[in-house]
Length: 131
Image 1: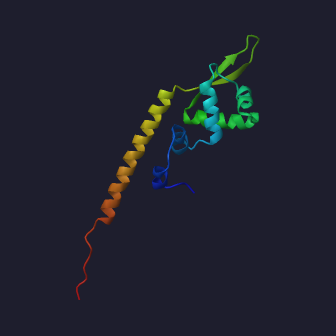
Image 2: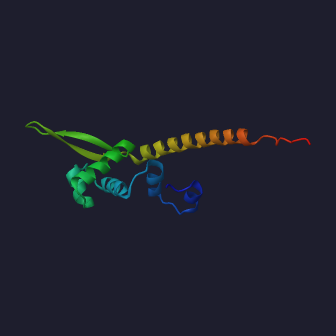
Image 3: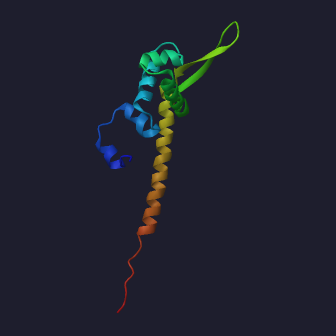
């Protein structure tokens, strides 16, 4: 079961906590993102798997979640003799932060709408019954 808003607000949150609460990313996803940010060159799945000490398939699933959330970019590298492979690099942190800000603004607007509906539904005058 997910934590309530009140429980989230009572916690000491770090920057990485945003990745979990806004995008639902796991600890491994955050670790893969950190490795990509700290690396000067884009990495293949095999290179990333080695650096996070996980199986290739596990690293691949993590990269897929990061791609879907917009945290990494996939690039195709072509071999001269034919064929290709993919490398992954982090998305610019400013772009990621801007995207999270937009999501937070959308969420805030939605919560405001729900609060207004709550007020309209429950802010009624009590009905008195005459004897």
